[in-house]
Amino acid sequence: MFFQFHPYSVVLAISALTTLIISLFTRRRHAPGSSALFGMLLGMFIWGGAYTLTWLIVPLEQKIFWLKTMYAGVVVVPTLFLIFTLRITHRDHWLTFRNFVLLSIQPLVTLIIVWGMPFLVFASIESITKDGYAVMRVQRGIWYVINIFYSYALILLSLFLLGVSSRQAKSLFKRQYLLVMSGSMIPFVFSVYTQIKYTALNDLDLAPVTFGVSGAIYAYAIFRHQFMDLIPVARSRLIENMGDGVLVLDARNRLVDINPVMQNFLGKEPSSLIGKNVLEILDIWAEKPEQLLSDLETRSELNLPSDPSRYLDLRVTPLYDDDQRLSGRLIVFRDVTDRKQVEKDLRYAMDRMQTQLIEIGMLQSQLREQAIRDSLTNLFNRRYLEETLDRELARASRELYPLCVVMMDLDNFKDVNDTYGHEAGDIVLQTIADTITRQSRQGDFACRYGGDELVLVMPNIGIDVAKERAIGLQKSINSLNIPFGSFNLTVAISMGLSWYPAHGDTKEGLLRAADRALYTAKNAGRNCVFVYRDMDLKEE
Image 1 (cartoon, one colour):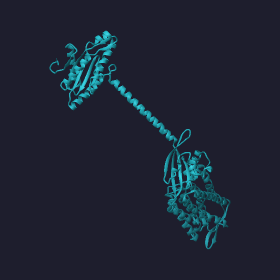
Image 2 (cartoon, rainbow, N blue to C red):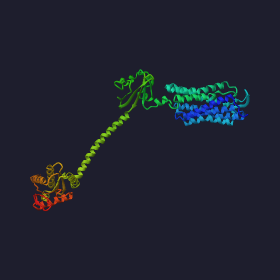
Image 3 (tube, one colour):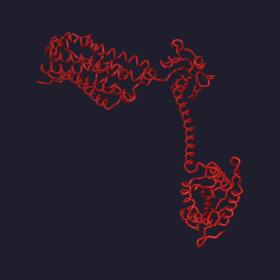
Image 4 (tube, rainbow, N blue to C red):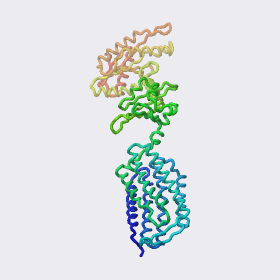
């Protein structure tokens, strides 16, 4: 007979299958330690399942095979339990590559010995009949004892770390830790009991029997207490490693906890601060610190009187218990000195930029003026005339009003330059330009067309009114006495007029018509005003 239905095999099979099912559920979780827990439960399934077969199968060779196979689970469960514990207690800094290698040495060596030198683990193995069933009698070897003590050391270290973390955890997370501890201690306690009662391994090892119970406790923790969904954050992660200063107060505003950043900032040992009222600490920072200790969350900015000056962003958060009673306060200080300096530098840079933009605008305006004005007379230049006259004509066309062009030329200006010099000629041109500018309307613009030729453009004015204004301007120029040294210079000027739309609808046409009228005025004896006519030219 190859199989026997030993009662122990049924209990062990149920325990192993329960562990397998729970391991499959943990595989779906994505939280710290989930992979290690899955591996540990899978190892427990291999351990329990192989142990089940040692009771179910009759031939000794097959029993020995499954006994050796069982050790694949025996050696990984304590190691993975320690890794799982380090993960959920947030001691990940222990899980270095070097430590992983060290933790893998003993399990690998044990498996090599089990399959290569089994006599070191099992001093003897024989088949006996007990209560009508074929069972194994196994005597322990030296490596069996070594493996037991090594495994128990890992388990005890893991339970110790869980206990430390549970003392520091809040109520919800404390229950999670306690559930993990209870689910892990049950098989450990029964394993220790089995080893104490050990004579020869021919009776039931109770540890695999309890794997199903451990799996059920883990399942309860997962589905009832959100284990693997809400993993507790260790205090060292939350407070010790914060970049901000933290003070924790009790309901009477006494300091009960402080993190290293705040300790360094205060420059005092925690022993000299713990138990003191926070007002004794804050009175040098704020005139009325008690205003910060209200029942609502408050936020303030403090300027510390130090050299150099420092700024702190202060946030005070009340803490309430389950009955909504005030149980304490959390005070978080953030040094915002650098941010303040950046803001100050930014404001300074913005002010400088604004000033520079104004200066650039002024320079641009100056450059534009220089580009469109004659440097001697400060009248617009010929380029500006050609660009602007087109726009004025287009506007006059849209709004249906006339536009007049007056072209002027100084009579015998060459004689002034030849007699008195070019400096005198420049003064004459500047004086006449000023006179034209003073007597122009807003909207008119005068230009130096070239040499001693000047052009005045007068939008929205009829030809008759334009001629009257031109004659008045001519008389003003004729009456000038321009001082130059010991001399008083007088000048005469000739003018030619044209107007839109009668004499042309383009700048070229209007300027040509005004030039012809000026030419006629020159030929008629100078110092007179002529208007261009379509058919002939005559003095008006």
